[in-house]
Image (cartoon, rainbow, N blue to C red; front, side, top):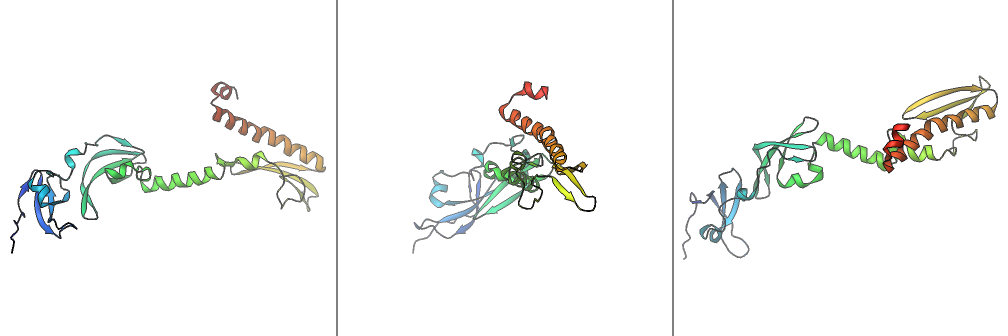
Length: 224
């Protein structure tokens, strides 16, 4: 019966063999190793003996201290490690722009979702959903660009409604989450004119500013 060399306790470069693992699909013996950097690594007998593998790969990994990834700034190599399958990955201690401390592996810092803390990611996702719905600064552009009355409107003009007790036409306008009362009027025509003038002054100015921001016309923005 063939005898195999026991490599447990032996050092190969930065790796110290700690355990024997089941052989791979080709029948090659595999060994669990501990790297000097603290990571664990698995290597076959041949790769260890011929010098093809001498570390977990940390020698190829650059020092990320001080580097910025998205909202994260790398502070230092962390003492914590993260298990991923059969490997244990070294983590980096990072500070998010909001001040939260998080821990990330080198490869996860290339993932956009990992380049911020959980709270900032939630806020970013919420903002993306709002933007997708056409909201800018709390205002849905599609609604203020098209003032056709909704199905629930009975006056024929958005923001104008009949107050039975006061026997008057009331006018209001909603903008950036605030409801503005624009007065009450005996004549429907007067109420409509007030509402239209408010739309031109409030919505019109806002839409113009959004358009100038989109086109990058800074001079025109300074004028308004």
